[in-house]
Image 1 (tube, rainbow, N blue to C red):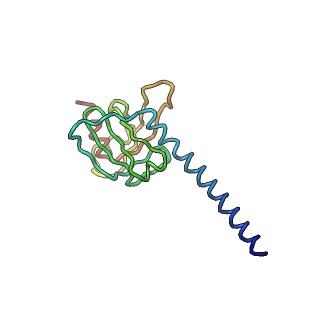
Image 2: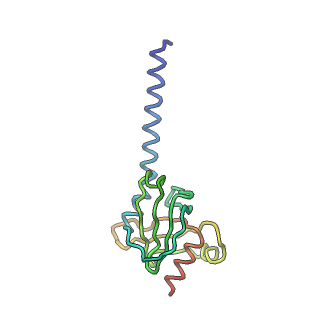
Image 3: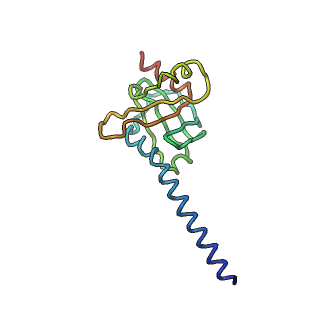
Length: 150
């Protein structure tokens, strides 16, 4: 093979790989966009405690250490870090009433100080997806359930 043929082949492989990676990132970011569309950002109350760089899974996307979480009396606020914003995530504020924890994960959410717990978010609009799978730190689920019960 001549040098121009090798360069053309490498260029073609790089372009195809870039197209495939772009399609995967776009498809994977869909669940992130659904979350912010279903639960648009609301202003957090003054003095709301925030934990930075928490691990969250939204749908099939695991955002390890890429989300800042704040919990006030009305909402669980999710703010993306730089990396999560590049994937298409926008800030979201989930009302405590929309967070449902399956019974199998409820005990784990109350007893474990660390780790992730699965929650199902039920958007308030009937035109949106029935549930959005969200895996949050156990402290966030416990705090949200406590505020919902109060």
